[in-house]
Image 1 (spheres, rainbow, N blue to C red):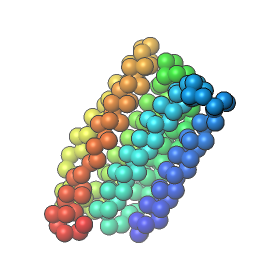
Image 2 (spheres, one colour):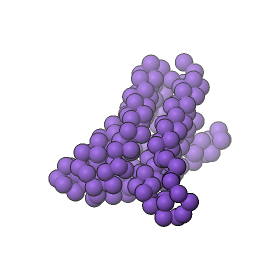
Image 3 (tube, rainbow, N blue to C red):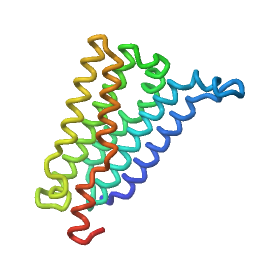
Image 4 (tube, one colour):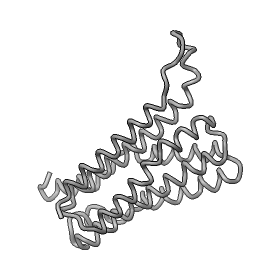
Length: 197
């Protein structure tokens, strides 16, 4: 099965997610800078979630650059990932309205990040199973330490939020995003090595 439709569909879903998130930010009433103050929590939540969607889009693009084709298992794993990401606007809005200090919004946000991260790892594993251990993809990815550390940190942040420290949990979500802001160049480097980029 050709990978192009999966990539186009994923791009469309992620674009809609970003659009929904930005539509949650209402135009301020008034014309002064102080009229923007009530929007600060929404803007901060939007920036954090936009970064996460951007990270998934970027890594998804690189991952499928090295993939030759997909199968049903990859399609379902990808849909599973997109499911969690599609709920991000709801969690972002709830977390922002709670000013990042309420337990349940922080937990929900973390559960969605954990679900998306787990889904992405399923996409990777499904692609590796399809392409084999000697494939360009397998040699480029190696051991996905960064992915596993991220899943562990989401779990820790959810637990910390549940213990009554949601601001700390949200801070950990932000740190994981910063961790991923440096693009994962394993695939790009491998494709350059073998002359495919």
